[in-house]
Image (cartoon, rainbow, N blue to C red; front, side, top):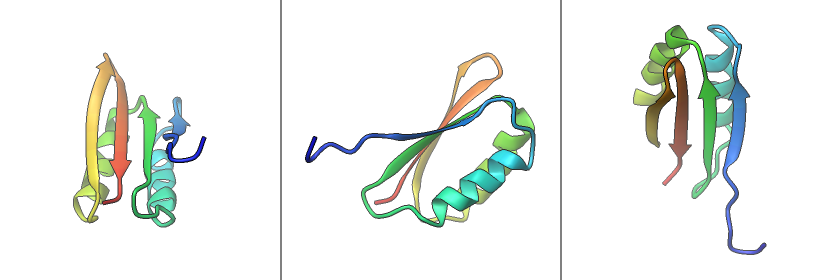
Length: 78
């Protein structure tokens, strides 16, 4: 559908650090203005490293623990 931007979802369930961080960095390198993506992560160590990466980028992002031990990381480029 024209005009709708589907949220790209990257499943990192079961991936241990540094795999989710590498996936994050790879996706960040190709994100276009106006795009968003979400990563689902279940490893707390990865969340801390992802936060460090995101703080260095000019992106909007949010990390939500949606269930005990499961996080959704949403990233958007302005």
